[in-house]
Length: 287
Picture (cartoon, rainbow, N blue to C red):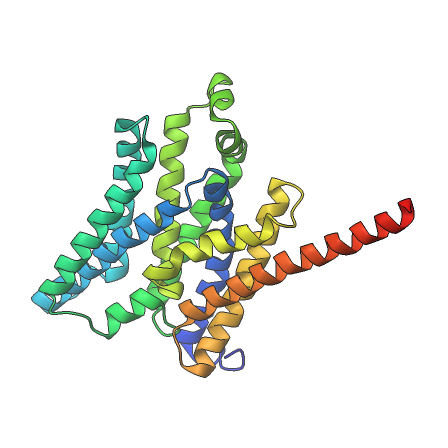
């Protein structure tokens, strides 16, 4: 694949998109995991699937591409994120209820739209599991804009997001507008999920946001180090997954996720082995 990058535009688009997604998904995933909102990625990905199915339905019924499935999915994802935040305010004592509610709604709408479009087709299959040929130049430009927005907001609001992630009460006492920051954060999450679906697919996108962080927190000594290691894990899995997907002619999403799980297992085992060696040396020193 690397040798063909300069020859085929669709491979360049996919590869550059993968590089970008490998940065922004774990970056935002670090905050999501710390805030114990890992399942929100699953909920918003299913809402995004409903938007994609809606776009494909419009295309099939009207015979014209009024709006691409990528943008309809992006729109549904943002709307879903707003509803999630509203529901979290309604159920203040049971905020986790917002996630299954929006997830169920996303699945329900997806089934209805897919049925109205007379079932699955190749495009929908690519959105479900990712594809190395699904990214157009227009999609790449949109994903670059999304990445710039995400990185800029995280840079500008890092202190606020950090405080809200670890101690929300203290953050509010210091004058941080928690409601506004929560809203911005969840919209960013929706944007990253919609952007990531081109590469890893609807059903696997949450793994790209959480598994790199799960591996990095086993070895990191601080939050910033967790983000850096998570991005390294994410980039490694995305690049290897795309190359494997191209040569083996399999959806890259599944390959990327399995590579992330492999990296997680290797990290856990390596840390245990190192801890065991250190413990043995300590026992030998102390007699």
